[in-house]
Each structure stands twice: as structure tokens, then as C-alpha cells.
Image (cartoon, rainbow, N blue to C red; front, top):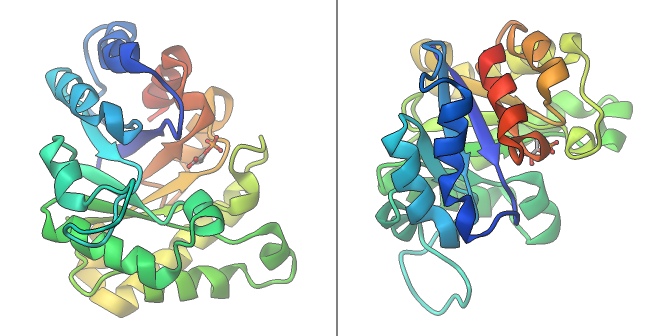
Length: 248
Ligand code: PEP
């Protein structure tokens, strides 16, 4: 399986960032390594431009969020189909910042991921424990509860990616140990196995996210059970993001 290396730009960027896929391609000498699949998730107002340019250079594009409804009185929101209309291939669902700041409960995340799948895109469902939960020994049970309540019934390894992002590692410079990452990815795969069967679990892409950077990417990406990375801060500089892609 190719490693899925995804950039989550969060609320960063501006109109002229539409040439970032071209810049990234130039840094990579025009070739994405065969072992990597590259995904860029910009703010949704730039999605069409970024998606079209990403596709030109053999990359994918995604939205960072969507609403679960098809349409309606939801000021400021976009539907999954609108993201698809902007040529998105993926939508991130339930990022911890959305769970903490915008009321994305497991049920909301599940509804969003369902509409992403119905719109023929891939849902990247984010799960992860807080520092308090890890220190109290509740990391596995927290993540398991999130998985069971956030993954839609229609999930398959083709339409779903799980991103394991310990909340305390996002944007903090701290990363989980390789041992903790390996154990949690194995736990996630076994929960998915229990929910959807052996075949789907074997093929499921599980990304790690949380302060992935050029200096730790190789170790993290070669950890057993890690099928990719969801990258925030280090995806804003194409030189750094390219190094992470090359580490795959
Ligand atoms: C993220 O936003 O998903 C993330 C992992 O951020 P960072 O890489 O900055 O920790």
C-alpha cells in the first residue's frame, strides 16, 4: 500500500498558494515517489484551484470538513457534494480541533463521513486521546469508543481512512513514542476488524498525525501499521512537506 501523506493546511494560505502543487512537484523533481500518495487539504474557498493543480501533478486534494446535510439553512457550511463539486477526493472528518471547538461529536462525525462516502469521496476519520486520557490509561478505550461511534456502516477500506492523532501531539512538537504509535495502530486495526472483517482491516489505511516533521517522518512512517501521515504545521512549507513525502 502506498503511504498516504496528507497536508492539512487548517486556516492558512491565500489565493496565490494555488501554485503550491507546482512548487512541490518542482522540489520533487517532477516525480512523486512510487511509495507515496500525496494529498493537499486547503481551506475550502481555495479547493477548486488547489484540486485542479494537484491533479495536474499527480496529487489528490481534500476538504478539511463538511456538513452532513445535502443543503439547507446552515450559514457558512459546505456539503460533501459541494466539496466533490470542487473536485475534492477526500474530506477530513472529526479533526480534534473540530471536535474540541466546533461541537463535532462522534455522531456528527459519523453523519459527515456518511455524506462524504455517499458523495463518492474518501472520509479521513480522525481519532485520538487527550493527554489526561493517556495518562489515566484510557487511550485505547477512548479511541475505540470514537471508532465505534464515528465510522459509518457503509465504511470500507476503499472509502475510509483512519487518522490516529493524539490530541496532545497536535501542533505541540511532541510526538507519541514509536512503540505507542505501533500499539495504537494495531488496536485501531483490530477494532476495525471486529466491525468490518479481516479483509477490510488488512487493507485499511491508518495514518499517524501529531507533529510529524522531516526529522521524525522516516521513523514514524516505517513503524509497523503506519500507512501514512496527516501533517499540519510542516505541510505549510513545501520544502519540509517534500522531505516527509520522500521519507515515505
Ligand atoms: C493536524 O492538524 O492534523 C496535525 C497533525 O498538526 P501538526 O502536524 O501541526 O501537529
